[in-house]
Image (cartoon, rainbow, N blue to C red; front, side, top):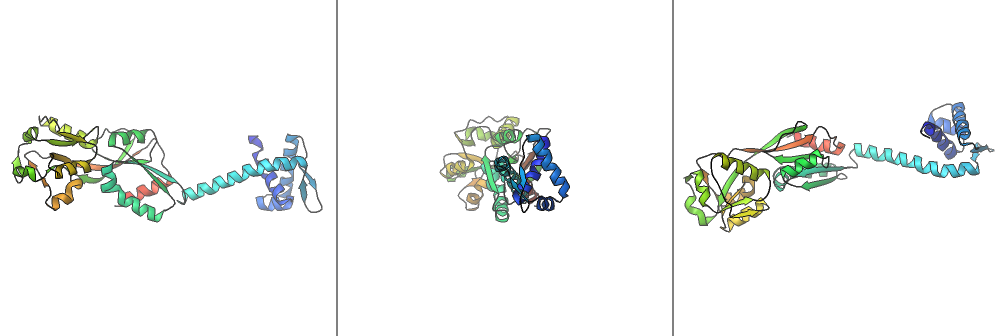
Amino acid sequence: MVNNLEYYKVFYYVASYRSLTAAADALAISQPAVSQSVKQLETTLGTKLFTRASRGVRLTQEGELLFGYVAKGYEQIELGEQKLKQMLNLDLGEIHIGASDMTLQFYLLPFLERFHEKYPEIKVVVTNAPTPETLYNLREGKIDFGVISTPFDEQPSLQTTVVREIEDVFVAGRKFISYKNKMLDLQELENMPIIFLEGVTSTRNNMNQFLQKNHVEVKPEFELATSDMIVQFALRNLGVGCVVRDFAQKYLDAGQLFELRFNKIIPRRHFCVVTDTKNPISAAARNLLALVHET
C-alpha cells in the first residue's frame, strides 16, 4: 500500500472535486497524469472507482466506500501538518522542565512569566525535584532541560550553562544572639542545634562535603524537606539553619535573623541550565532557552 500512497492522494482529489481537470489543477500536475494514477489504482484494487458523468466523473459504489476511508486518513494527515506548523510557530506545544523549589523561585520563574506572556498557548510542565532526580529525568528524556544547582555529577552528554551565583549561609534568631558579629570557629557548629535539608540535594551534599573537608562532624537537630521551612524553624529559635541566602534574605534585611560568620569561607555555588545532547528538545523549549540565555 505504501507504494500506492500517491495514487490515493490523486484519488482523494478527483473524488473531492468530481473532476479530473480540477484535481489536476489542485495538484499542479497534468490531466493525463491524473488519469494514469486513477487507472493504476483501479488496476491494483481490481475494480472501477469512477464513472464518467455529464460534468466530470462520479464515484462508483466501490469508490464511495473507499473514499469514506481515504478522506478520513487524508484529512488526518492535513490536520497533523497543521498542528505541526502550529507547534513550530509556537501556537501549540509543551515544555517539560526539571527544577527544584530553589531554582524555580530564585531564577526560572521570571523567565516563565515572560515566556507565557509571549506564547500563552504553550503548556509548561515543571517537574519539581532536587538536582540528582532532575539529572535522572533529563537522561531519561522525561524533560527538555533542567535548572539545577552545583555540585552535581558531570556527564559527557550534558551541556551546562552557568547562569547565577548562589551562597550558602547559616542563620539564626534572637535566642542565638551571642553568636552575632563574632568570627566563629567552624568547629563550633558541632555544638549547635543545626537545621539541615533532608535527603539527597545539591545543597545538603555541598555542605556535607565542605564540613567533611574541614573535619567538622555535625548531627542535625532537625532535617526538613524545604529551605522555606528551615527559615521558619530558625525564626522560631529552634536552631541554626543552613540555607541558600536567597531564602533568608528578607529576614536578614529586617533584622529577624542574622548570619553566622566563620573562619572558613563556604565556597560559592551556581545555578546551571543543563540539556542532554543525546535527547532532542521541542521547538518551544528551544525558544524558552533562548530567552533564558539572552540575559
